[in-house]
Length: 632
Ligand code: WT7
Image 1 (cartoon, rainbow, N blue to C red):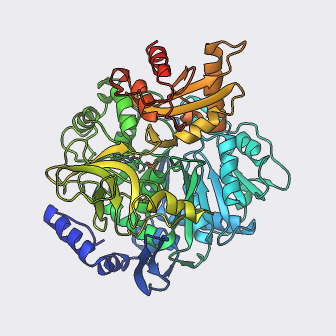
Image 2: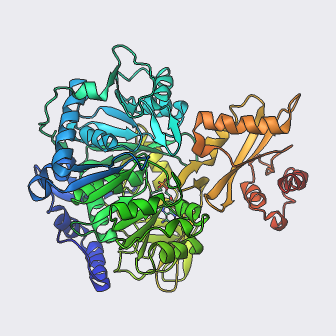
């Protein structure tokens, strides 16, 4: 494609154009896609309501751009290479032609079950090619997919199904992860006890474990496609029709369904993929994320496949059968671009360099990082030991809500600096605001990261609750999208993300709302009140620290702590399980009854000696007791 930036001056030039005349800029890029009907206007927007539309009245189907468009040019090229959990099992390659056929066939199968334009479909699956096939089949028929990461609990799954009133669930019997076998279908069965909207459950046979099939509701994947045609005419979608919903945590309440639409998301994920990773025809690209997160949506499936890339999907974990698995896969498939999370790098770093030694890693050209700030030590380790000092690292900052990468070096184009996401992509107009909403201009400033102009893949709403979208993202600083992150712009104009400034913690690159974890803890019958904060964790980036007031009568601390952790696993899932639970006699509060999280954060970080003035607290005496307990 011709929209590739090759030099720093080229980047500067494109960036200028994208700001001076965004409409011409994005129209030029959108022109190289297949539209059933071109748009009337490139963008219409206001950040007050908010109301954002890109490629207004354009008609398309994103899967025609992923599949049909590539049939003649690269039909026999690998679209997806699937690497199974067990290295002794054969990998699978799906060419664009084969993927096209499988998506069309499965699209016909779900259509036959009554799923059509606008219907919501939950996908709760392991990392198998069928997960991508299911996503694309939904997009093909105009249904809205909502993937729930297969590590979430039955309770979290049923909340999401109910919130979007899904008509269908696509799942598997079980899931292989490392040396574990996870009973996925059982979780779906349990979740559906609390849901009325689901008419059909399609289950892929993956592990072969025993599952129950409910007559009239449940059908096997292989039975659903039996004798079904592999030809399907894609549904015509409007640019602004919903493509998918993805639930994510915020600082308050239950997770919200972030809504992305067809046209803008298509343009931006393809454009950012090609430019950030500098993907060349014939390269093999691997993103280690799970399709349950936005990274998997935008940079395993949509972005790479729109660009006609070969994208690897990996079912397993970095440490099975040993800590060299990632590198074994890089050599086996001659990976050129490798994209992972700092938490994985740190976890592997802990094994030393021995697991890397058997591998050449000489196919690698670009390394990527995503999900959380990458510390300098991990950056250097990644750069020296994996990239052998010759691969640029693209530290990509973005969010579920932004749909695509917003701040990142373009590989080999933008000079990098450890721990810096560097510069915004063309079309991304960043501003730094102080807490009063004043713009901090110039370099060497630090404040709240906001965006003042729409970009094509931004969220349009939060499903079923537009006001929540307005309140969460567009009200803190009027007429700006507020990211929730703190940022520094250094003397060179480079951006460094400092982490969340709200009550969201980032555990291994996954977002958790402190309120959400507290609500789960409070479900335990002996819990009276709780406060959750993040604290620095060597591998996870941030760990979850819970301060809990309990009714201790007849109970041991040890037993209660264990039960509290289990309660969270049951209600949300293992990713939300607190690393530390401390039973406390009280929580530090202001005179108006607000919990002083600042103090708890300091204590949790081992910085209890520097609490500053606490005399204005309603109960300053409790602080000493908490400090003592924390040091135990
Ligand atoms: C939050 C978004 C973007 C896909 C994965 C996470 C943090 C993300 C970086 C980075 C520093 C980062 C931010 C952001 N974050 N990437 N390169 N450097 N922080 O998506 O779950 O929506 O989380 O992750 O705090 O707000 P998400």
